[in-house]
Length: 151
Image (tube, rainbow, N blue to C red; front, side):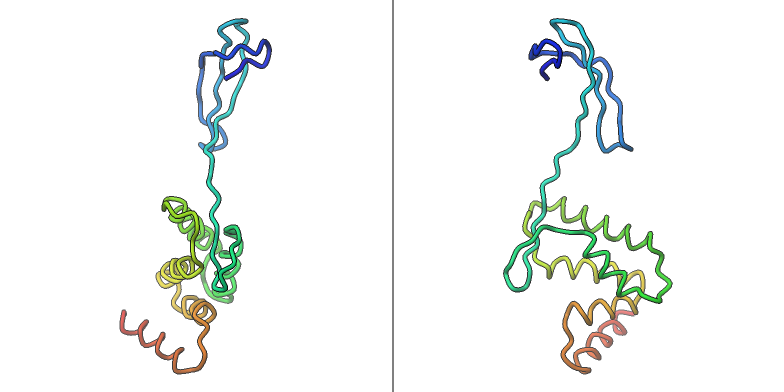
């Protein structure tokens, strides 16, 4: 780390502590040439995720879109907002942990449905009906039958 005062390329770390609730590390450094102290912050670099849409187009991952879809599915259902934000965080973390930087929407949709199934079955069916684009009542009934068989 270059000293901001004398531009000497070497310094030593005097103190380190977590900052921003663990999202970064604050380091106090001392220049080995002029002995002046300065502060640096270290943050983890996040690699952006790209979503591959059904039509083949690509766009950057937006967790707010996923949250809005889940909110619509849970409308007038006894599902706390905090539960939905937790699900979104878990899915985003799962996607970040994978080595794939390009994720098809089908994978994201399946992850959302798996989580919603455990939270609220009505919300799950609502989300599935939009996500899987049910064409008629028979495909809708087939999904309900699968849900009943799992119980």
